[in-house]
View (cartoon, helix red, strand yellow):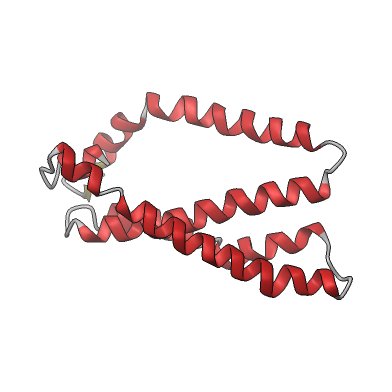
Length: 152
């Protein structure tokens, strides 16, 4: 966000902080999407005795394309207008929030005896990527994008 919003749109630090409001709106929307899915679909399957832990993964099939779409939208509209990357934040957090909630629900239902190991493996992989990506993110962005346009 600092690269896009302060570098392209010359936002101040206060404006940069306000640019994160797309995450707040997306989290609320993602939460209501998860609640709707849980009450309308998962609880119905539990009542019919057709529930399996893989039932949670159906939500991921519905919103699976939302994360790459939001990342593409953020990069494509980075130099058009500041509201478009902010809207793409909302789509990203809807997908990310539901990805985490559904994954943890699936792990706890399917690997109930080994849930601590499943959570530990998930956390180790996420932490490895979170540790590595900041090392090359600015160089990658500067290599592939100059003022919002791809260079070859």
